[in-house]
Length: 267
Image (cartoon, rainbow, N blue to C red):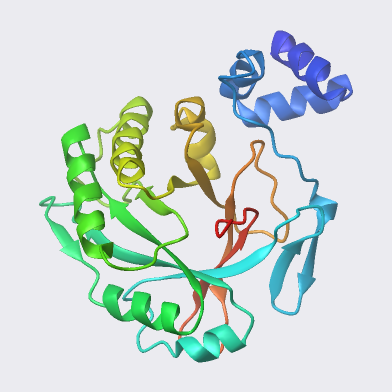
């Protein structure tokens, strides 16, 4: 712990007490990342918590050149009026196109995917998509990517295609999957997506970002963080931040996830 704190102090100029607290919270992977060669490490978070502010119901980042508001949706949100959503200031949507079951492992389409993609595009929103993965092998992760590519063929998808692998709290076929395996599954999925000409990325919460994924192995892909707070505090730089799952947006009759995007994908 003392060595980790000294490394943290050297790279951040923090005092010893702060360095000890931070390295304990972030874990050894953070220090390993700091010691990695520059071309192999993950850039650290360039923003402070004081950079964030509320613009009505949406969070913005004053220090970012790009600060765009978006939603991510699935069949849990029924009957969306996308023009109302656009008129309410939402600029992009990330739509679930499918998921893999956590018991039998079958792949299922999201029943509202096509409707949501078409509706969001017609209202002038930029669109990305995600797949809820329960892959247990690299081959299954590739199959999920192929499913997504088939589902979005012919649509103008300008935001990333995201791999969303999450642990299930009930008994699941994925219970024994390890962090290194998750990393390999994400890489396999993203490689297929990127080879098809789309931006690819990985969705995760802070726990998986620190303790499961080796983000250095995913550094060439976009990162989408779930952290429900008024300011983003993850140690590493991300391109998208999901900051609440209880957002209220005109045109959507249920609570919805709200996101902030730091990157201009259109350019």
